Length: 154
Picture 1: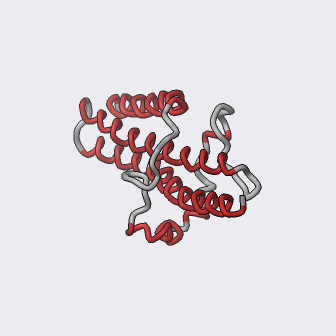
Picture 2: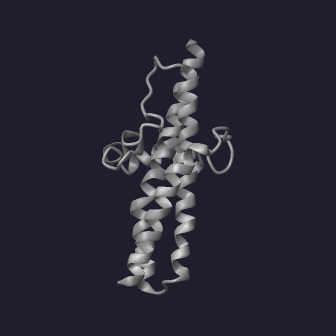
Picture 3: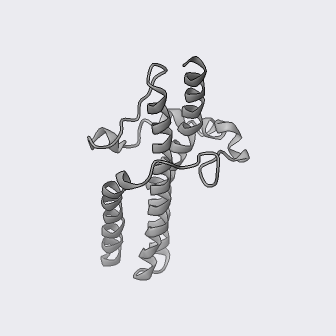
């Protein structure tokens, strides 16, 4: 139980620190290159439609609703093109942060080994990070398509 508590403290600390450091990450990612580009297996984003992401993405917490310094995650056709592009960049920041959280969570294995650690990490990765990565990868192509429409009409 002690190792579980240390693991929980570790991943909670990572999450807290990431919320303070994420705003300092650059907003100049190449969305057409690794790792942010859309891959063929994602089928233009249809993969995420198949897992019903529209239904469940509203169920996961959105930190921008609770932390005023974070950019709001809503945009409309009437929004300025720059805002749409910035929000697309924000999806890259969020995706990167969640991949880093997954990577850094494996430090749990430095002090806890065995099935308990494996189950803890699997639950943390599957429930605490992958949904957010999927949401970013679902939203980004839609934001880029919206930005292209705004550019054409603009």
